Image (cartoon, rainbow, N blue to C red; front, side):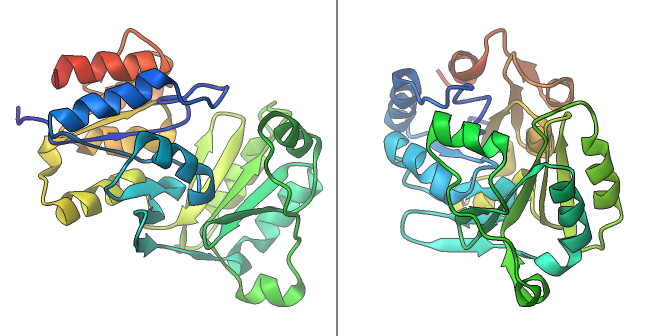
Length: 265
């Protein structure tokens, strides 16, 4: 096994829990890695406007991955922004909206919502976000390009399958990830965390076998599989655990610390 030169970690469910608070333990861990000249960055489904706060706290200087691999950027430079046409998603999103689901979409790194739902109100109360409401005009449906779109079902009784079936009928411009009964995210066809990891590998001149990745969910599976060492925290889904080389005994940041200690310290 090659020595680890780069660690790429998921955010939600991995570095942070449901409270979305970045602990001092995470910040201290990255500082310890810096002292050993091991690079650290994130790969998250979040868009940059929701990730930048954590990037600043962790003092990440190298490029990082957002929108599940559709966007790669650093504090100084945009490397990749893969986008999808709204036009091909119209029937799917109108159906989700009709069913009362929440629709969050991103354009050039900024998030918007179609309309305010009970779930959106809860997000505003808990996390002070999702205030920009805008439903597409006829012209926008035809011409707008989107970084990522999320369909969120607060009821979570399995009816998200209706949207999943529509996703399966999308043309080749799109790919999607389903998160249990909770949500579906749609991005550009070639965008995932694994492809973004490979881009960083070439950019930083680090072999993929020298990369350790850590995650917890379906959008991490390819990255865990294709990196040199793939780690799933204890709270990960069964799919993420099956893809990992090592499954932690601990949840969230404690699992990250466990894995890094095992392979890097």
